[in-house]
Amino acid sequence: MVHRDALQTLQQTVWDARLPLEIRLAASECRRFDIADPYLVASPRLSYLPLLLPRLHKFFSADLIADPETVSPYHGYFTFEGVPLKWHLPLGLLYDVYVLSTSDAGPEDSDSAPLPFQLTLHFTQGSSEKPSLPDATPVVLHDSFINSVKEADFLRSGTAKPIMTLSTQESKALWKSAQENDLMTFSKIHNSLVPSSGQLRNIPLRVYLPSSPGHDPSKAQIKVVQSHVSPTINATLQGTPATLRAPSAGQPQTLGNALHNVLPSIFPSRRTTMLGTPLLHGAPVPMNAHLEELYRSACYADGWLSIVVAMRG
Image 1 (cartoon, rainbow, N blue to C red):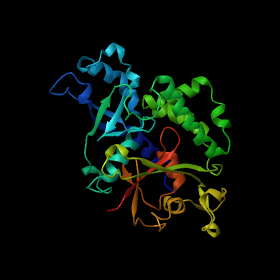
Image 2: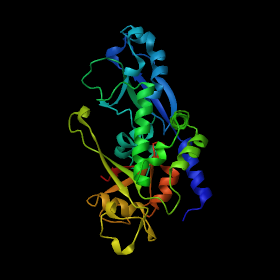
Image 3: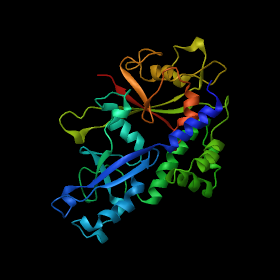
Image 4: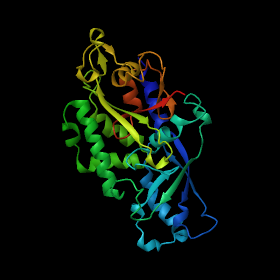
């Protein structure tokens, strides 16, 4: 069992982590032949790319071919090496999926991964490459975030009652805490939603598996395996699917055991990484890490423990 102070330190580290970005306007939308200067910023890993759109629209307005007054900043979207990025995924998660998990340096050497995260910004309407998501307006962003929180809340408690009892003010404050990287406000509201130890029904877990785009980068997809895993496991039920196990007074559920049950073909062993390495917030995670401790200290702001799998060469 990890000491409580250590868990709090880990949570603070997760929220403090920032990712350097280099954002360029798409050449097809730029009036300058020598390409507009890039927008450089270090954003929190837990943040969301669309939150930058108003500032980016203002920064690139003089370089747009189109009249900036006719271009909504919320229509903007981002691509990485030709791949449109889903705006509802946290920034750090996108980097881990598209860069860190495929880096030649390997997942264990994250310090050598390519930085900054180089993105291209698009505003062109009607583009066939644009992700099939609505414009990232403030209302849409809030609703998307809260819907994800509700889903996680239902899995944690077996009911959506905790999130439904939040006032409108608390709901907006939870989203604002993610926008402003405000751990204190987030913890106050999030901790009121998460059941105490021993009462947690399931741990909301999402595992991200990048797929190969072949010869067409725009065809790259992210495969997401979603599961709800009990925080404890009875040793006599090792062969029972994780989704069928109820909380018990058994042994703490480990990351390795959860991944073995969810993705046995990639994680044939519960103790060692053979075919893939689990990454959380840009760092490899030991297979013997207790899943509930990981969840309480390192879940994303939407209440999900999101693991990225880096396949071994």
